[in-house]
Length: 261
Image 1: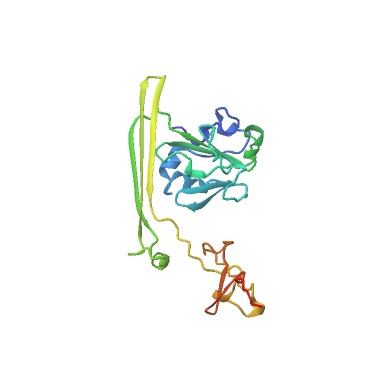
Image 2: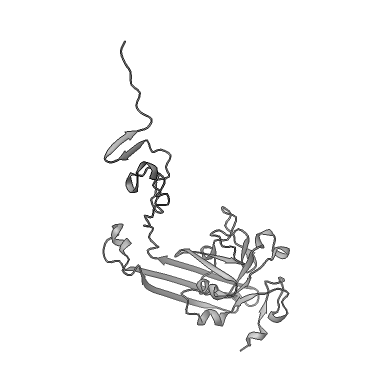
């Protein structure tokens, strides 16, 4: 077994080199560390690397950040899979594990938590992560991974939103990998697939972001026309023509009227 001091990296200068002779700081999560991590997935384990932060926006959407530039779409952080940029074209930035490799196929992760613009362009100003997958020539055969658990334990929001039953919800993730060599040292292939089924976080924060919007008129709570709850969907609509206050409804603009002469 190679010691940690003999590790090699490729992300620092795009060529294989000794970890100790790398021209920049590189944080590496190798195969052994991934296997021993208590985190549910290798992506969760990245948060324990120095200078790396992981934002969990949903069960299937995690975003890497570095150097303190916290952003849910971090367009200045490059994410590569085997050296290939896999950013989402519609937002121009990486979207974490949505387009990343599965836990069965990941070999190692190298993170440069600092500017790498000289090598990788302006999208790597905040840092870079390079995911290295398993080579089908070296890792053949069928692999299956099953994770099962529960979430929303004693969560009152489950009953509040009418999801029914007990608050506990099942989490299930199934991953399959198959690799085979067709022509030794010349041709091989691999297939990966992951199926995740679970109840995500529930948005039910009714905190009013503009509680004092009409304080001078004595209108508070549900009577406040400027009420802006954190999770009140649809209240940003520009097509609200009816205002209800104290049980009375008023239309705006008022309907046109005619009078006789």
